[in-house]
Length: 467
Image (tube, rainbow, N blue to C red; front, side, top):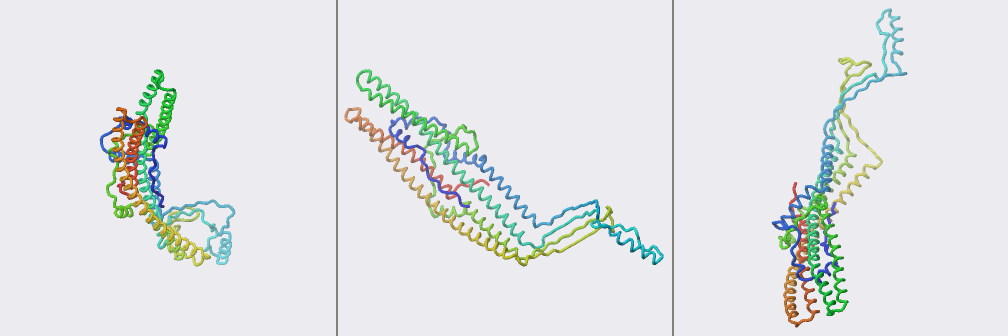
């Protein structure tokens, strides 16, 4: 019943990729992105993708069919309370059956002889059953508490399936946004690595010239080649991650694997609005579909309990039939037959089986109530954890922005001192690595903050779902 769990923000970049980016020059982080940059914000773009996924996702299509099946089941349960009318017809050819006329005709013949008159027929031919019997049969339940319990259970089952469908829709909306954020981060990593390639190529070319002019030893060239090979290795792995993220995102929206995915400027990443924990918890307790599923589960358990208790009550039904019967088809008053019955059935003793079934149903209801209480607690914890995660991510992003700005200024100063010969090469590379790592950390922190905003949206059920 309660299956949705808070999803942690997974890092989209492997540790080797982060380490390599930290060694890249500042130009790599300011390179022009190659992905499409449509107008609008990330929220507008993601809302469009969410709507597309809710319309095209194959898993949701399966759930829609499950809901249609539950609707049909509810109509079937309602139909059991309505009268049923059927036509039954039989025509038989007999062999070896007893003919009542064989016993009656001799007796009638003897009576006629005694009376001296032919008062009694001596050609009676009657077999049982009759050769044909055709009738309309009407049945109507008058009192059957088990049928009412079945109707209540079917209605609750339909509500349960509907709530499960909407819970899947809400989870899909979050998955689509998380998948897009993962793809966008992988794209930024690929762009950064690709922008670094020319720098290392130039480093390799300069190293070759220095060795050719006798100004450097061969280890300089070997180090440059190693750095270039390491970059190429990480670039291929990051491209693989980007392509996998693209296929995963397109799977959610039922699009071709290589369908293009639009991106927006990173400055428009998602931001949290309301972060009041008590308000969000109250909203979640009213809107989360998992809690509606729990309520439906309790209703189903109560219906099962009622069905078990119905075994202790009598069942009353009305039955009526009308038709014709005889050895030949004759539609007249001498051959038509009508029957009307009021049928009562009552199971007086069943070896305590009914009592055991009722006890099982009661235990199921109590179990469902405990499960609902647990779900309420879990939803509250999810929302408060999501609020804390958003607040922490916001503080981390502010610190990352300050760190990046300070590192960039520090690198600018060291770069100027290095150009004047006042700083060593070690200081220069250290300042550049710190600035690059700070810039990359700011990018990752921005996407991590957006990811936690998405999780808060799901946990607090802030997104309005289509009907």
